[in-house]
Image (spheres, helix red, strand yellow):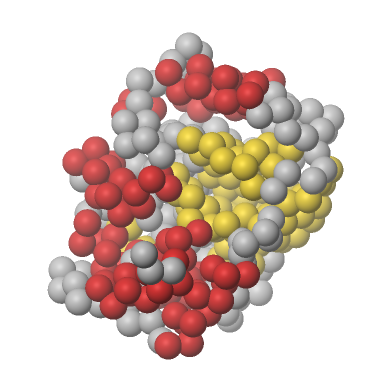
Length: 309
């Protein structure tokens, strides 16, 4: 069995032979950086990523954010819409693959709506394999250092709903009860709260937020709106709650495109559009730090820290 780093190189060689989508050939330096980051990520409690990533129509954004990943060890998250426009096998292989795909061995993905445009996300599950969870569910959890991390499928109609008593909501409450860590994070595609003009709030996710809130979770990360937004800790109804609330980040900044904001929500603390980049969380046993890292040539950033409940 080849080593994971060798698999990355083998994968890249295979991807460059795809003729169904625009090609991007990573340099030898980028391949080596991916191998190095895979090796260094062992034992480093960092969660880094974004959503809304690789457009086969214009790949420059995903190329730029993938280069940021080359320099950051840790676990990579994606919060949906890995490959545009339809999430096909060819688009995943030819556009996501040569960019963010060189970090596939350390990626834990979440599903977006574009991922379901082709055969109920079958290409997504074929590409990511077991790392994407059960293909009939697309939700799962894992531990990262002292933290418990939950990945939700916000395409609710595909998994029997997200309402109270739905299979996913019941699974989430069981999972959280079985993993009573001091710190918990969750991520998915459609944000419960968003000031983005294109999509905005998705109330269907409120029962999921409530389950996380009841368990004392710290952080939720979403995509869908192509912007960056950070919220103050809040409850499932959008009320500020410094003591027990969950802090939400929208990080739809992976490279697809950027969009404008509507009227900011009352709990919105920081907003930016027009900047591709990554959200990096450094996870400590009882606290965390966040930082938005822009692509080369951009200046917007955001950073801070908080203790767990």
